[in-house]
Length: 223
Image 1 (spheres, rainbow, N blue to C red):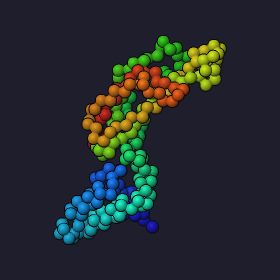
Image 2: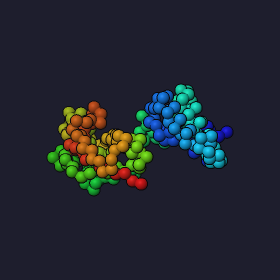
Image 3: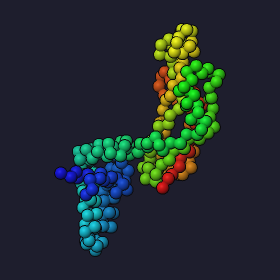
Image 4: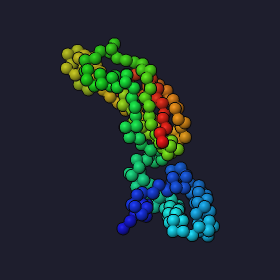
């Protein structure tokens, strides 16, 4: 049996996009959007009594019933999140292939991963190159979340810096690692917007810190 959340091809319908409303829209917003769509597509009003128009209005009515029923909406939201990787706020999770790292950052990541004996004085603490994140116009309207891979250092899990002969950290007390920085791109962020992130004020967790002072991120909108 075909799911009421899908179209004839079995593809999940995003009723929030259809109604042009946010993921957290209340009942009044849903009703207002529904009324506007009915005025545009209902055969009795548009006088376009074609099969295509009837299918459109059927989907609109179905969406209205789902979004205004609390239990059905919760179930539909779970399907939408699993299908489109959308969080509870309606933000889209971006795939890693949408991130373009500068050559300097790529080299830094590679060195941090391969050279376990790198000394603290050799670390690059300030990187002026940009990281570019590419989003679609739809993701721009809804908001997006991306995870950027960055070099970091964590407390040695074996000696915590108390053993000069430690075979893991060699007495430094910290080891090279890689952590992820969550970047939230608000809805309607303009193309070429720059985010300057102060990494010194951010800790991935209580045992880890980034090795860079700041990061400059540029948002690119792709068609």
